[in-house]
Amino acid sequence: MTATVPVLTIDGPSGSGKGTISRAVAQRLGWHYLDSGALYRAVGVAAGWADLDLDDAGALVRCTFDTTIGFDESGDELRVLVNGHDATDELRTETAGAAASAIAAIPEVRAALKDRQRAFRVEPGLVADGRDMGTVIFPDAGWKVFLTASAEERAERRYKQLKHKGVSVTMDGLLREILARDARDANRSVAPLRPAEDAVRIDTTGLGIDAVVERVLALLPARG
Ligand SMILES: Nc1ncnc2c1ncn2[C@@H]1O[C@H](COP(=O)(O)OP(=O)(O)O)[C@@H](O)[C@H]1O
Ligand SMILES: Nc1ccn([C@H]2C[C@H](O)[C@@H](COP(=O)(O)OP(=O)(O)O)O2)c(=O)n1
Image 1 (cartoon, rainbow, N blue to C red):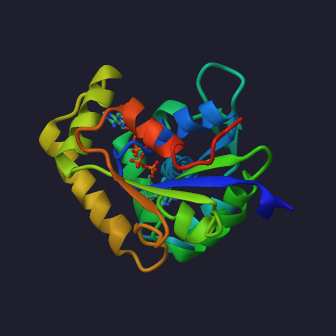
Image 2: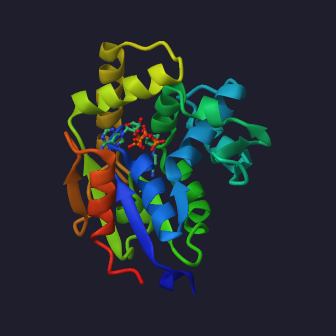
């Protein structure tokens, strides 16, 4: 009876803090965490390894079915295995993000990943982050959040994050990529990025991580 397992969905655009907030909230609640973007990124990376053309929808759909994606939670950091290879670092690159965004616009790819995402709904509960968690994958979720922040602040967050990892990027380039990805994710015909009607919107511009975590936790009933 997976439908009775509690779910909190956290959707929003790139750099709004979905991953950071979802992981922290899941840890505080002792719930599982689904990074749905990692699935789309994994297919993007596998397509890159196979040298597929991002315009070849048929090949990308086949690639989605053929790609195995595993999550290794045994260490300090969640590791993602794509076709058995640890692709955690490659997955986080902007190239993988852009490929994921392009692939995610193909309806058959989204359909193929639906059940893999819903399988994460197991006791004692799930925090799911992405673009369509509250609208398509878990429309019956008990709590839905839509995070936003200005594009400039999101680009600045990404800049600091990538600089910290030693990746060479420019603010201008990142802002352009964020705006392009926002437009593609919001304008696609299937499961476009938009808040569920019953989502609580939190604008995180100028709001620290801890403050956002507390606001999200405050939405859930008191935990004994
Ligand atoms: N409210 C916040 N204030 C400042 N920095 C934040 C905030 N939320 C997230 N960050 C930082 O912004 C970066 C991107 O966050 P991330 O969780 O990866 O966003 P998303 O999953 O929405 O793309 C990370 O380095 C994270 O630490
Ligand atoms: N539920 C989801 C999750 C991600 N996607 C697509 C659209 C996004 O631009 C890419 C990458 O998503 P991801 O959440 O990993 O990216 P950000 O961390 O927000 O930059 O995948 C999607 O279409 N639906």
